[in-house]
Image (cartoon, rainbow, N blue to C red; front, side, top):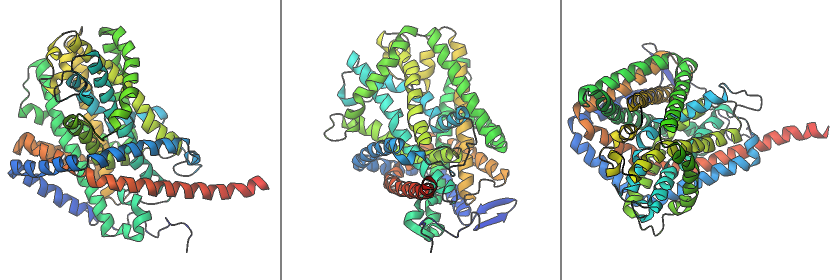
Amino acid sequence: MSSNPYDTDYEIGQDNVQVMGLDVHNPVFAISAVLIVSFILFAILFPAGAESALGGAKAWSIAHGDWLFMLAGNLFVLFCLLLIVHPVGKLRLGGQKAKPEFSTRSWFAMLFAAGMGIGLMFWSVAEPVAYYTDWYGTPLNAPAGTPEGARAALGATMYHWGLHPWAIYAVVGLSLAFFTYNKGLPLTIRSAFYPLLGERTWGWMGHIVDILAVLATIFGLATSLGLGSAQAASGLDYLFGVGDGLPTQIAIIILVTLVAIYSVSRGLDGGVKLLSNINMIIAAVLIIFILIFGPTLAILMGLGTTTLSYVEYLLPLSNWIGRPDESWFHGWTVFYWAWWISWSPFVGMFIARVSRGRTVREFVTAVLLVPTLVTIVWMSVFGGTALEQAINGVGALANGIDSVSLAMFQMLDNLPLSGVASFIAILLVLVFFVTSSDSGSLVIDSITAGGKVDAPISQRMFWAAMEGLIAGALLYGGGSAALGSLQAGAIATGLPFTLVLLVMCYSLFRGLMQEKKAQDMLIRPVAGA
C-alpha cells in the first residue's frame, strides 16, 4: 500500500459519457441540469412563495450563524497569513519544476475580474455614503454625518472588501490547486475532500458536493447578471434616457451573454485573459479620470485615511460579541460573509484553474494582499470622492442614497465630462459581467466534465448561454422577486459551507506538510553526498 494517503486509482473522466458531442460526468451533469430547470420553473411560477421560503432560510442563517461566520472569517485570514510565513510557502503548485501559464499581470487581472470587480463597481460609491448618512445603520453606531462617521464608513467598507473575502477565496483556490496539480486529483470541488472521504469521493457523496457547487455557481452568476443588468440599465437611462425597464434589462443580458459565449469559445488565452486585461485598462482609465477631474488632493490624502481607517476598525469590526450595532452587523457584515462563502466554490476554483506553477507563498500573497491594496486605492478614489460630495452638500449624494444602482452615476454627474465618465463606467460594468460569466462557465464546465479541462468547447458555450437564459427567464417571469429568491438561496448555503471550508483548511495544511516532508527527504541525501 502506498504511504501517500492521497493516492487513488481514479482516472479523470472515467465516469464521463459522450452525448451529442458533449463529454460530461454521469450523473453530475444530468442531475444539475434537471435541478436547474426545476428551480427556474418554481421561481417563475411561484416567485412570491420562492422568495418567502428562501428569504426565511437566509434570515435564519444570518441570525443564528453570525458567530460562526465571524469566527471562520477571522480564522481564514490568520490561516492565510500563516501560509505566507510558513516553510510550506516554498512549495510550487504542480511540482517544483512547474512554470506559470500566464504572466503575473494577466494572472492578477483574471483573479480580480473574477473575484469581485462588478461588486466594487456597484458598492464602492453607495456603501460608504450609506454608512455616513445612516441609510441602514452605521458601523459600531458611529455618529452619522461626522468626521468619526466618515472614518467608520471607509473602515467598514474596506473591512467588507479587503482581507476577509479574499482569504475565503484563497483557501478554496489553494486547496483545489494543490490537490489537483500536486496530487493528480480531478479539478472539481470534491477533490478537496479526498483526505476525509477517500475513495468515496468518487461516489455519491462526491456527486452531491459537485452538484451543490454547480447550483451555487450558476444561480449566483445568474442572479448577479440579472440584478447587474438593472444597474447597467439605470446608467444607460440616466445617460441616454433609453428607459430602465424590462426590455432594456433583457437586451443587456442578451448582449452580455453573446459576448460571453464568444469569449469562452476562445479559451482562457483568447477570451478570459484578454477581457480581464481590457478590464484592468478601463478601470485604470476611470480611476485616473476621477483622480484628475475630481477632488485630487482629497483623494490622495484619502489613500492614507482609508488605510488608517481600515487598520483602526479592523479588530473592532471582527469582534461579534456584545456588538451595539446588531441590525447593521447582521444586515451588512454577516450578509457579506455568507455571500463570499457561498461564492467561494466558483471564485476559488477559477483561481485554481489559472494558478498552476505559482508557489504557495506567491499564490496566497497575490490572492490575499494585492487585491486588498488595489481595493484601498479603489475605495479611496470612488468612495472618497462620493464622501466628499456628501460631506460638502454637493449633488444628489448629499441627501443620502435613494437608488443604489444610480449612486455611481450620481457621483460622476458632479465631475467635468460626466457623460464620458459615465459611459466608461457602464462599459466597465458590462465587461466585468462578461468576465464573471465566462470564468463561471469554465468552472461549471470543469465540474460537470468530471474535472476535465479540455472538454469540448461547445460545453462552455452551453453553460454561458444557460446563465443568460436563467437570468432573462427569471426577470421576465418573476422579476426581482424571483432573482431575490436565488440570491437568498445562495446566502443560505453559506452557513453549512462555512464548516466545509474550516475542514478544508485542516485537510490542506496536512497535505502541504506531507508534501514538504517528502521534498525534504529527497533533498537531504543530495546535500549529504
